[in-house]
Length: 243
Image (cartoon, rainbow, N blue to C red; front, side):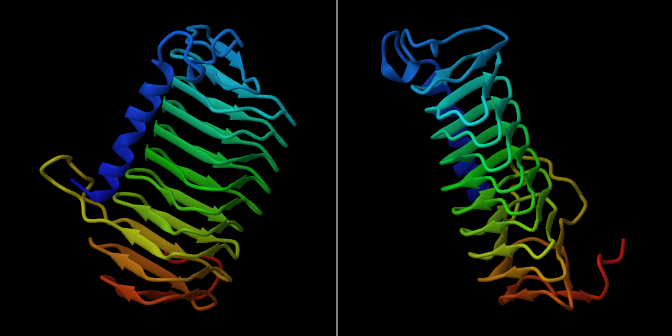
């Protein structure tokens, strides 16, 4: 089983532990409106909001604690702040200039709008990770399946995937390198296609680019990258590589 998959598998245990906390435990939200609710939608509050079946929203400009759900999406509006957001089956969307400590989902994508800031890590097992202009993740971003796309963004702790394509575009800056792990065929049936890694014009990837499986690595002649192991970079000119 890939090392990344082992690490991300803990997401399910983390979320399940939060939403199934004993009645009256502070992690379940108590009587503050953040209890184990099955309502279709909840608005997060400052002490933390947890549900099993339903989405959670954090209103614009509001400060919130930890928010968790099992079956539902999490939406963090512009300018809002919170500690952690966890879901199992659902996406996480972070509005412009909003901030959080950690974002984690199992089945769903994560998207950061302009100027959003995550002070630790962003992770999904099965889902796209999209960072728009001016957004920043101080820690790492990681998934197993799904496209990872940076457009004018900054990642401080590296990018990791097993079976996902990666686009580092728009002058993005990645510290900590890139790792594409070798899949474990004894556990999963992976796609036959090679992950496509693109480092676009003006983008910088500091640290090692390490590939434990075969990939297609395209690097713009106007990009800067660190040492490459396990792949041969294909240099290209212009805005995008060959199709």
